[in-house]
Image (tube, helix red, strand yellow):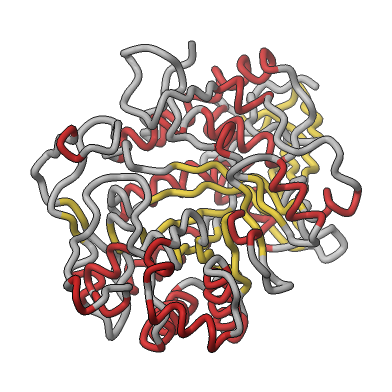
Length: 474
């Protein structure tokens, strides 16, 4: 298929012609409409000498079609080339996770990323709003979550190496920020108009040091040891997890219900990853609650949190999503798994009947460097994930049966921000690797990496127009 506009992702069906259509304002001349006879995920875009029209099976598919039209308008020099495109995505979930907890990102910077996502038909922005290093969402009735938990005294400089705090260097600068509920509702609407759904994450019961710093009664502090910690200033995993008192579960209910009200998406991510059990193992209260709940192993406490959160969200009409560690305990039947560790987790989740989002670290963690060398900005560890890796690496286990494959909701890239300190750095780590994710998640016709690379070079002008500080191609 000849593709003079170098679309990314590539449509499944596109027929270009040598004719053109000229309009002083192509957007105002584009006619759009929902056609109930089309599948809900499909759209048809036609540009002919007589004009341009877009029909789709749903409002979401209309957004995808508009984003294709935007690429054509932005890529054309002079009159628009005539084309008929019929297209639909392979996966319903085409996502990007942005961690705003480790380093706060201002609303305009999130809006820029949403614009870039929409251009590439990525339709889910997963916002990681809470963690040990910062709490970013206003919760009514708990002002200290943002007043105290929203700020840390300083941040680590350079990579975190070793476990001896004496070896760490800090910048000495207070860092933080948070979003009001009204700001988040406005951001949800901004994204909705561009075909992007925002899915919030409140990570629990681990990764909660910022909340425990704000409200020590939420933690596991024996009276003999004191009840004061700060918001975490280093990366890694904190032992400070939620306690098991009734007050903790009241707190979680309040948080989850308010978050569910802010974000209209049918999902709320509840984390569930990297939860140490050290404090529970030492806690008299935890042992008493285990007896009350009929649990025999400390590890089962996390399952209790997962079940509670899922129940609260279900009552709000939402489904809970968890990182793949949640598979280590009993799960509610309506749970969704986000697999980040090994591909074997995809096989386990789908074999147990859980819908699964593929977010595998080795390919889809964009805090990894894009190349070796001192010219690259600071990144986590020593792992390198190149653009070609993202485009060509196997993402799914080969032995998934047809039913298991039907449970794959989609693909998501992750931007963890321990080492990403600015919007420009975030954009550099995201692009152009996110272009490869967009093409794979959409399910474009199979192309060699060389063919993708050639189209991508023509496509980069669109990123320039958005002001994206992407990494130059090799």
